[in-house]
Length: 276
DNA sequence: CGAGTGCCCTGACAGC
DNA sequence: TGCTGTCAGGGCACTC
Image 1: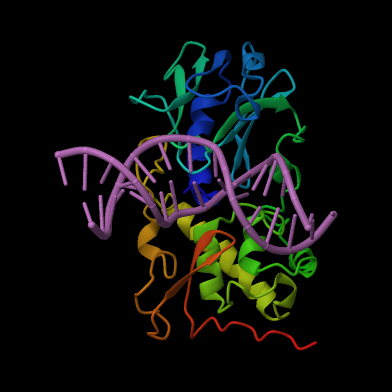
Image 2: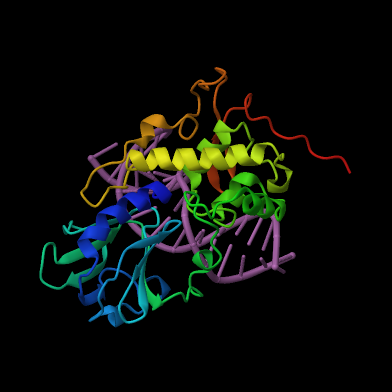
């Protein structure tokens, strides 16, 4: 599932392909009309000025003060090649290499739409998104202040994109495993000494995964059609029943906020419920 | 308004 | 073999 490393991998491939190209036509294909594919017709005639990323959202500034927003959802793939099925949107570019871009998304959780530059009111997660974890914007001051705001489980809170952007189900489990934090620990109960460790784990894991072109579990592919190789470095996610690499205890799985969560019951002790 | 729940959507897979 | 049920989860609508 595309999280920050997967989206960043795709972004890096799109940048040299798309920057400076003019959109001749942008169209919805096999997708319902609605918010997820809004305003595509407006992109025609606009030049793509670059390919940026905020969290898991790709943002392509256009010359007419619009932006093309692309979110891969669970199964979104971008390719100059047309596959048989599941084409949700298509860009036709001006003459040059690979003049067609296909957005192909089996499960339709993705988005591909045009907005006014900076106007994200139809995308509330992007509108309220936290700092980029691999930039200097991700400071301990900001992160600890954000964690104090919420009593919800740290796992769930990380997935909200509010304290930091780009962390999804896989890397949240990995970062919590590495820092010995139980995923149900209330965000505002993370101890002061653990906060910088958790930040560092998030940074290192995401950076290492970018190096590996992300994690492919099933659908995710790079623009070139390659798989991400970080799956071999996962320590917790998907390892139910395996031995914890730290202590040998069997990794367990539980559902938190509707998401599978993998953790070591020995290394990641569940916090005691506070007495009233 | 924060927190919690369930929905969207399709394919893979288990079980009978 | 083929049917049915379950699971996967990012983002968001909805409820309390």
